[in-house]
Length: 464
Image 1 (cartoon, rainbow, N blue to C red):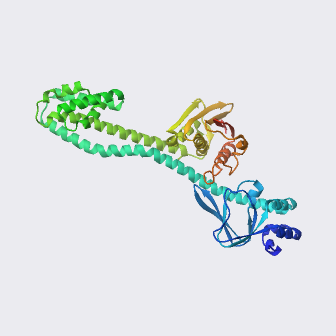
Image 2 (cartoon, rainbow, N blue to C red):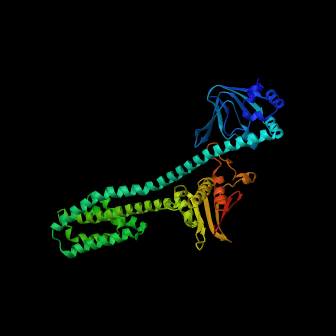
């Protein structure tokens, strides 16, 4: 049985009179834990307030599926007051690091003590506030790391294809250029008249223009490729299938090849089919360069978007183009938007820039767009509207997901409130959004939701 002397070792209970200490000792229930045993699990309903008389209790919280240690309690100590007073699920898991002796005070009995003694109440709320700040600080850190991980994964996904295109182009273009040089040398040794050489060069240059400016209809190119393959096989070119595609992409026709090769049909030397190979390889090289260039441009665009998104090389507060900030954020999320999510934009481009914390404002768009994508479950329409509303910029982010139940709409901006399973959501994303909008930018944020439509409206002052 718990004795008054043990209870008095807890600083909190020194505020209570002896009669109440005896009352507590008579009403508590003894709970003994072996090393490694779990006292309460994160997400469980509140049980009571625990008094740790002997031993050591570890505190962990699930983040991204991993149980992360965030602190510990050493005897003498008390804990468990937060879910009792907030009527929320237990925010952490408590487990025994060593063999422990604890006593449990029922929630109603603990609340009775709070109401009777003002000093006791103040001490409890001071400790609770301190603990909540500690948990919030930990969760915010994990939230930032998770957001960084999401952005990094998205950026890596987006960079992978263009980077691979650049690598392929540079790798394949080297042997192709060497072979072209060899062909040019052989052709030059034959002392072909300039007029005939000009015909080949003209066909090559026209093909370059077709490839570089995408002037060829793909359906027509497919039909032409079959015709070219038949011609090449009849002409006797080895590996004709390998030449038909680049010739087709260059816009070359069977009639063109007939004209260019007319003088060599009865030639038994290498020159007979080298011209055709030279033309196809020239187009191949140009296609490689174009593919590599597109990849490099895509990489450059992504890097610029990431730089703009994070507002690198700029002051903390600066003039911000809201449209561009949202576009940079969408660029980061493009890997998640591609499959079946349509993005509908309705922008008022006449709006001026606003004085804002750019990187923080982009966190707002990140959280809201991320939540909208989750709500649509990978299929739907994301609508973004930017317009003027008096002396404010109004940004509306709307999704056509399942909606937020009316019963919880008033709570979604609370710290640690989340509808996601334990370990999947921290409950701080929308709290961070609210703080950035209201506290940092003196703006407002509002929610309207019903089945099939959820809209977040953010208003930011045009003049800070």
